[in-house]
Length: 454
Ligand SMILES: *Cc1c(COP(=O)(O)O)cnc(C)c1O
Picture 1 (cartoon, rainbow, N blue to C red):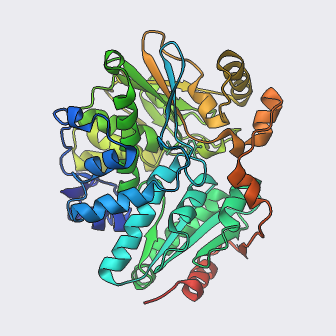
Picture 2 (spheres, rainbow, N blue to C red; picture 1 turned 180 degrees about the vertical axis):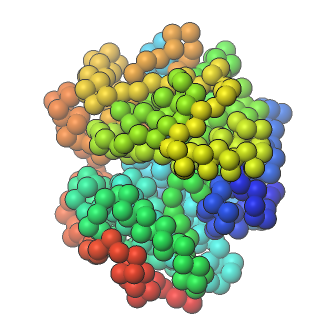
């Protein structure tokens, strides 16, 4: 299968090259040339284990990797999850389930994609007999998950920039207490946005980028979106047949990455009734799905920090479909948005998507209510999913992080401080971080010095 850029000005690539490239050279995002139709395969998927289902799904896309290699690589990606179901679907009440996506090594849903991405990168190093360097910026969860995807992998070096003092102490420990010598957690002296723009500049240096075989780890990688489709399919298959036609997935989201994956799966013939886009107070997506206008706002730090974003970087993939797969139109929409900070969609699929937004005060009261009504402790991101539920649908709320990652917020809400053995273990290990100025030249030099080469 080939993958095209949403902006249509760069050649189509095979799966492995599209994954290695990340952002397309024309500034677009990669998408499958044609979406496969799984509606005839659903019976065949019944009862498969998570890794087997993931393999059966991905083999349709990753046609340039031999099937047995892909199967092994996928199996390895889910060995570090502590729940035997990998993504357990738990009934909470009438017409209500929670899909727990936090049983991976960093206790957030990003492990689903980044464990796989780590194995894909490692596989490429082996096939091409080349080293690679991976660079990303994070406000917390992505960096930790990316690091744990590549930890100790031969031939790879990973550099993660994060704003010093602005990620949670536990997130920082997940990045800095690994003990692995191919991991460099770089604490920069600016904000996440400063780190992000330094990173853009570094990736703009083509000579440097090619010489170090630098890959980006961010939420727009094709492999991430495809890996995330799988848990929607897995959850759907776990439902009783009578509920499958009426299910609404409720997705706490900021970058539109998670919900996009579910929506693409629906377009591939899995009969999902709809999606609820659950934002925190940073509500660009809520406003979009209620008014049809996509308009940039300021970011206000919230109790659900992994959803504190200003522009939803995966949204361009949705736009591509919304404008009838016309790359020229995508370029026009993106140019208008860049110039004016807004874009109004003339007609819009309001049937599939509903939206909610949740303030910090509501996050606290929802954590209390969910605990009282169901005896369930929801993390602050997951709490946004419980804001409003459609009474006439079966709701599956995606739980994107373990409450143990946000002990302060949970304690404030319900007086219980959740813990997790893997986080407790980190507290005894030394923090190894590298402090740098948010200066592209200094960061480039650091990478040059520390990247494993060959
Ligand atoms: C990253 C993250 C999100 C948001 O994911 P999107 O890709 O923006 O949909 C939600 N919750 C947690 C815990 C996260 O780490």
